[in-house]
Structure formats: structure tokens, C-alpha cells
Image 1: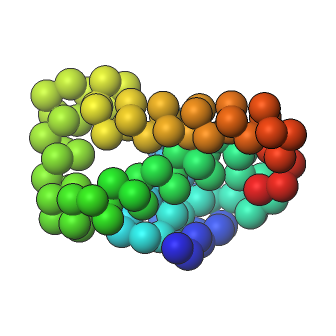
Image 2 (image 1 turned 45 degrees about the horizontal axis):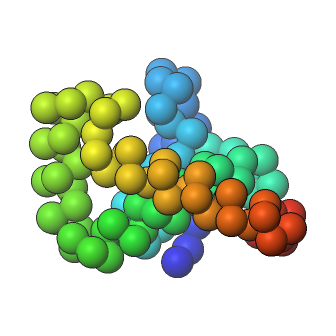
Length: 103
């Protein structure tokens, strides 16, 4: 799983929307900022999207994401809700184990 930091497209997109903190396509997450500036929650959220891409395939994920975004909006998109839930759970478990800083 590779990540791209200070990506030109994400920098451009972040000028126009708050939703551009991170974006995952396939097994690559794109961020507008430096690696050390990516919040742990966002990193885990984007990693959850990588799992979803693996589960549904590229086309299957994209069709689902856009359909859900159209039907429910971004905030209620089931794929976004699941990714946030996974991120919260992973960070919570890591905090209980005392390993949040070891990401």
C-alpha cells in the first residue's frame, strides 16, 4: 500500500473543498500535505478505503461510492461511514494498547 504526499491534484482540490484532506484510489492514498502532517485518523480512514477497494474491486468500489454519494450525500455515504468506523476502532484499540504513537 503506497501513499503519495504533497500531491499536486490534492493541493489543487483542497483549495476548493474541505473534503480534500485525503483521497484513495485503489491501493494508493493521496494527500495534499507532508507525511508528518497527516492526522492519524485520516491515515487510518484512507487505509480502510484501501480494504474496501480490495473487497469490491476498482470498478465495484467506484460505482458504489458514487451511487451512495448521489443517494445519501458524502456524510451519509455507507463507505465513508464504514471507513470512519474502522479508523476510530483501530485508534481506540491502539490507545488501549498504548501504541498510538507507533504508527
